[in-house]
Length: 203
Image 1 (cartoon, rainbow, N blue to C red):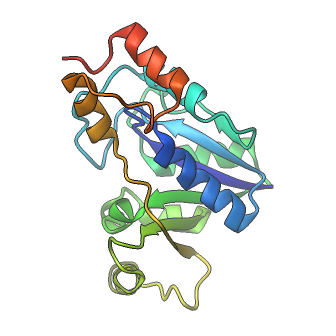
Image 2 (image 1 turned 60 degrees about the horizontal axis):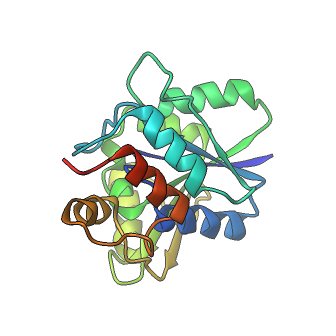
C-alpha cells in the first residue's frame, strides 16, 4: 500500500493543504493520505495555535476527499511531534506500507535540522512541492546534494514536484479572521462555520 503522510499544525487547515495532498496522490497514485495535525510543532513557531482537538476537527471538515484519513496519532501522544516517531508508529501499524512524506519547499530547506532526518529518509520517500514562483527546483536539488548528500536526479528518495501556487497561508487566514474579513474562498465552508461557532482566532 502506498501511503502519503501530510503533517502540520493546520492552524487552520485550508484549500492549499488539500491541493498539496491531492497533487501527490495523483502524481504517485497513492492509496491513501494520512493527515496528521501536530501536537507540539518542533520546526516553527506556533503563533496563535488553537487546541489539538479543534485542529483535528477542522481537518476532518476540510479534508473530505475519500483518499484522506485524519489521524490523532500526534495529538494524543505524550511527547513532542517529531516526524521520526510518527513514522516508527505508522510502520508498526502498516508493516507492508510504502510511505511518502509530503512537505512544502520551506520545510524541505531545513530538513537537515529535523530530528534524526537520516532515519526519516531511511523509512520513507520525501515528496516536496515547490511553487513555480518560489524557490526553483535547482535550488532544492542543490540543497539536497549539499546538506543531505542526495542527488535527486539519480535517487528516488526525494521527489520534487513544481506546481502553480495556491495563494493562501494559515497566517493570512488568521489575520483575515481577526480583521473581520471573509475567508470562504480560502477554506471550506464547514471549517469557516466551525471557526465562527467556536470563536477561534479572534484574539
